[in-house]
Image (cartoon, rainbow, N blue to C red; front, side, top):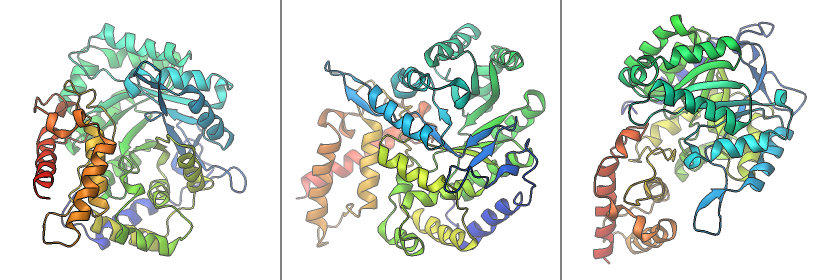
Length: 443
């Protein structure tokens, strides 16, 4: 995030982006922008349109974080009964877009999602999954097999939205999809109707994104999935969204809460939001920010618990777009938030499993929470030091097993290349380990 972010700059760019398509007629069914604000009945889910004019719930279910349970043999498996309850409630309240991938939940997400959705008529829901051929040098054969495995796991004969997963550079794009002729194969599958919409997700720099936009002339992306939230807006999200909107490419949003961090921002930041809308959750502001942009087709949220699902449904049933004053408030919040030295982990778990057992996402999640909660006190003379020290160490042991804490990282770097946020994971593990050791020594 730029250090010189200002409330005025944030407000100006966000307002212009929203206004750019706000006047499009709702009769243009081919345009996702045209359906902005459309609702099904009073209090019902807000829907946007895909390229074929079909209704897509603006709240999309991210299936990366299905509830898990111990199978009795020490292995975590998907809690299928809990998944079914969540899916039932989501569908009953208008959600029809579900997003998964072969790599989610150590390979369990697709099968669990397919098993739950098959209980409903196929035309009543849309499934998105991905070609996650990110390991090694993917061949055409192995990539095509991954695609067909997704069809089997999901128990479907076509995929509504298929993505080239997590493109990070032009080099990786060519290696994974072009040189092995995989993308040509997928375009053929789209022509046959086995893939209804073909797109990509990315965590990349602007040069790579510009290259992918140039590829639109050849491959005609039906949608694109980007990371967007009111913290990332000034840095990259504004640029990505604007380039997609120019081409009328429907936008799918991932990480609207920055891996959950925007659901619980520092208290002095959240006060402004609570004053403006006392009955709304902090998370709802982040969701409404994304939904305010007319080019956004759906906003993904990985909802593990029923209370999360219920709260998010309130934000989109129907969506109430942010006002100019709301955007000004978020601009101020963003300017304050970026002052915190948080580790930008979104808990995607692409770095896992660690060959040495380190629980990387849990360590970062604990560190960021303690920073948000004011438990990072370094000065022994500070009257808060003893209480903060104890709270940090006790909560660390409760949230991360001792054998999986930062001191067990050997700095092999295997995790770094897998991180879509480009976090220098070993360096941050070393920093956290040093901080913990310092707390233990200085009682």
